[in-house]
Length: 396
Ligand SMILES: Cc1ncc(COP(=O)(O)O)c(C=O)c1O
Image (cartoon, rainbow, N blue to C red; front, side):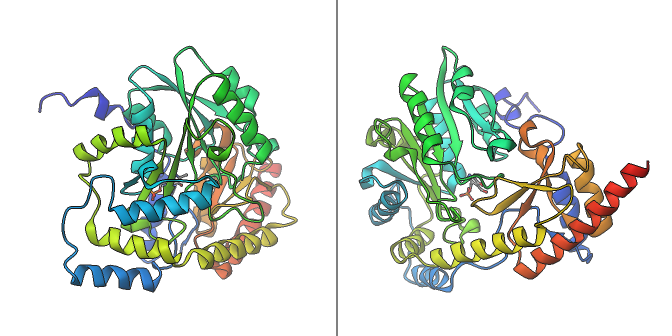
């Protein structure tokens, strides 16, 4: 075949993609092995029944047609209303563009703010698609580490030190995947000050905004001078239990949104009609939102209670979102080896921290997408594994 473009070939570099343990575990589970899957961030429950019914009704009503490129007007209005709640700032429908999932909103945000050769900054540990999303825009990027001892909140000085002449965009994520860190107002103020000082765009990934744990979600968009430079990524995947429906949105200055409509023209050509109708109902009625938030809060507490007093394993971040990060450096510096052995010995699948960047090298990520009973049992297996692993290493 002729040569593919370097753009498409360069999105994910060759070799490992960080999902090896997860896919090996999944294959074994599908073959009948009793494996606890704590590796992936997808709910173990279905979409709320009211949302499903709304979709079925829409299909029956003949909602099978093209929709406006930026989203149905009522969908944009419903999304704007949620953005107003999430960011605390008056939001008009023309400041919102609907996308198939938060991932497309991230892609659009990178395309909207970066030219090829521009430089961006992101914080590690990071959500696994971030590097590829910047590469797809032809941008270079620097990864700034948030430290475990800071609860994985980034330091504004470290971000500022990474700025170059061609830096245009900073990407942050709170509540965070994979760390569960929920950034404090002080951290966000300091980040916003850096963006204002250096005239940067800020992409704020807030797809877990309904899961802030015992903290309050704060959006940097609401801080002084930030609405004009902030693009907020949102999604119904986590908040409304709709991962497979692929629906999310970007909130940004109206001028930028108007330009972004052309990206929808050449990529998605608008959203699925009946999914849009179901999403409108789910957004307007907050179907499932409180229940899902409560469920994850209860699960987080159950898992953290069960790991309390673990020798050699320390919880870091883990205040909100759908994940818990465990520092395993006292047991093993090689998180991949740890994850493989945990799978072999105790049949528990977790994500090695390295999948989320160097900053998480000595950690593993636990997904809370399982019942409390499963999480308690997984904690027990982890305790047993760590005790015998430590023993073996000491006697080796
Ligand atoms: C931090 C973060 N951002 C964005 C997304 C994309 O979500 P979706 O495309 O399902 O809306 C995810 C999904 O796991 C995520 O964890």
